[in-house]
Image (tube, rainbow, N blue to C red):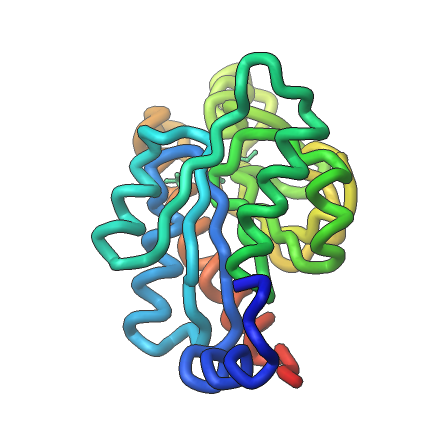
Length: 213
Ligand code: GAR
């Protein structure tokens, strides 16, 4: 928590490793990959909280099942984006995160949030750097392949320094081929498999290099 003493912080970190807060708007299969990797010991870190902007998000159910703190922070109809992001940042900061992972987080974060966590926010996107930013990236890759304009897509994990959409210093990528006989479902399944591996492997790498006071 934000008010935790350094001694308590070190205690917790020594037991569970770096503290990860996951922001998720959807079903949470990537969150699940992180939870499973911490449970198996592959990822020496702890998912300390899951925060969603959608109270009905499956990711919150996954958190509850894993006995992880889960919080819905919903933007009010009359709430300015800056005010929402500041409120969201307060909610996230309360969990004292070392890393904040955007795993299917579908609200564009402003500097009111990002400035609070420099070099700590990581985004997962189902496309290669510079390609298909924004929503429906998998569907758009599939449509482009059907139109004969591409034969591969991919996934990436990157830092989020500013308000650029699915853009920032790249930490890892994986290329995903698109087969001629792919349906949208088979392609999406292959991309999600690639995401789960890439996100977990990237977090393993980042947490290995984490230095705690
Ligand atoms: C994932 O494909 C993730 O890359 C994508 O949302 C999906 C969430 O799946 N994120 C974006 O498109 C961000 N622009 P999940 O809820 O099963 O983890």
